[in-house]
Image 1 (cartoon, rainbow, N blue to C red):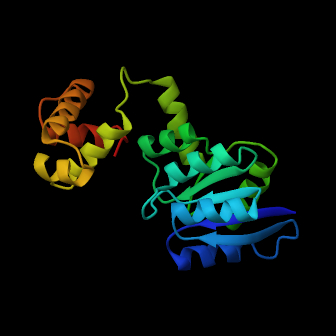
Image 2 (image 1 turned 90 degrees about the horizontal axis):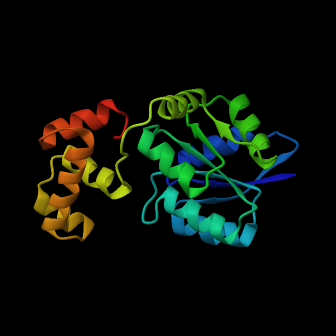
Amino acid sequence: MITVLLVDDHPVVRAGVRGLLSGEPDITVVGEAASGAEALTAAAALRPAVVLMDLRLPGLDGVGATAQLLAAQPATRVVVLTTYETDADILRAVEAGAAGYLLKDASRADLVSAVRAAARGETVLSPSVATRLLHRVRHPRAESLSAREVEVLRLVARGLSNGEIARALHISEATVKTHLLRTFAKLGVNDRTAAVTTAMAAGLL
């Protein structure tokens, strides 16, 4: 029996995924969690074979929860199940140890197949994600943005000033400026607007 833990902060989404997996004789949902911290607690208690993990979670996000969970339980297979498919999100999840990356619009057949494949130790990627990763390998960028640089740029895209970004991330304004200058250099641009536009075009945001 493949035991599954569902991690998503929306109860409707969890109920939907549980419904998609119900009726499969070899799969059972043993628990649910609404945050990264809850996921760690539930995983430690339930020891599921597969965890379906959303990326956007309150507090500890899906990537952080994945890394911590796998550090404690390396035999567990984490499959990201999310609506986001930017290069940065995919790479962060893979680097954290995720065994798969699926989008929430996956069909019931694809979801069931992914759970079984992950439990067998296989890597599971939705077609669009596989295409993005293949493109990334074939056309590597000279330099990738760090996770913090992407975080800063996302806040720039939301219209925050350097001071507001500094307060949001609990860093100094000077550090924000340093991150932005490095980002400009990596993207080959000279200002904030161009950086956001270029990053979006490249799938980084």
